[in-house]
View 1 (cartoon, rainbow, N blue to C red):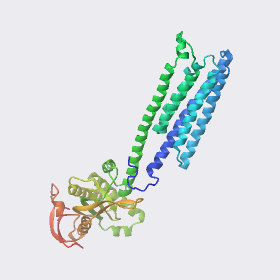
View 2 (cartoon, rainbow, N blue to C red):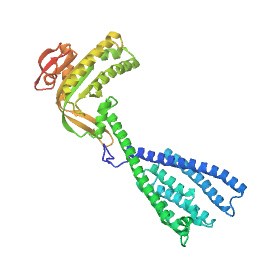
View 3 (spheres, rainbow, N blue to C red):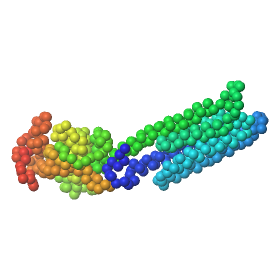
View 4 (cartoon, rainbow, N blue to C red):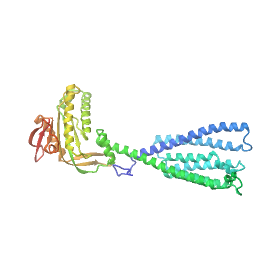
Length: 438
């Protein structure tokens, strides 16, 4: 599974930090469940033992309730300590070593086995202790081991429980000939072998579940990591549809040649407005204006690459290829002009005019920068030419100019389209044929 989506530098990544936090949260959750279980068992057993003592049901087995009582009390205190420790680890962002999980599982399983052994010595038929409800605590440990997100730890929990249960049963089993149904459980190992197998298989199953939970968490965190990188490179003006496609590509944006349509948009007379209004008024104006632009661009599957104060640069066809980027760019441009015109009529914004230039061509697209800081970049003459086309709107008193390359690819020519003709662009050797759409 790819851990470093944008960098090969083996440092502690966002994924590592988030997964370790989730790991500790699950460990704390597990300790919390066991804390509740042992607390309730401790209180319930205390009441039960008191009743048994009063009714004199023990008949020489007075030490058994004491052993179990001490065990439940110790486990309550122990799980409380683990629960508090996990809370501390979350605060200090520390990593929980895998060996600590193995040690914790070993202590819990072995302590239960020892308790069963010592309790068994109080009975005439010690083997009966492995038929008591205490055995079910093994299964509780195994089930909750899934929260440790480790196949190895869950398998170890089940395997250790099975092995200890087998040796304890084998040590306590009675010898002799089976003469009654009772002897099947006191003198024959077959039923205990089946339980041993159940414990080991339970550990194996828990390990499988833990592995699936781990994979699910990994995928979720990696998806979040990729999405954060996408937002870092493109800002928050990325449509959910584009984000979804890029997530499916793991956010890997290698440099390549790609056909794109570039749009440059400029707010007319913005400098004059900015000089006559407060900074807060200017910012509010920009926010309202660019919200319309960004939403429209997203609608037509484009991406706002840069906000330029009084304008912006928009790309159609990269990083996600489009069947007809020119068509999308023209529709977006016309839609922006229409929406701004309506806002002017309603007085939502100060009277605003725009200039838009669109050109289609080949560009080099991909990530540039260092391992720690990367930005998505569009490079090529198509970018420069689109910027030059936009600047000509003032000369031709237009709102939307496009190149012949764009005109050749749109399916429907707007009614108000006017031929501008061949124009010499600043800094370009060859002339370019332009069209005025608005």
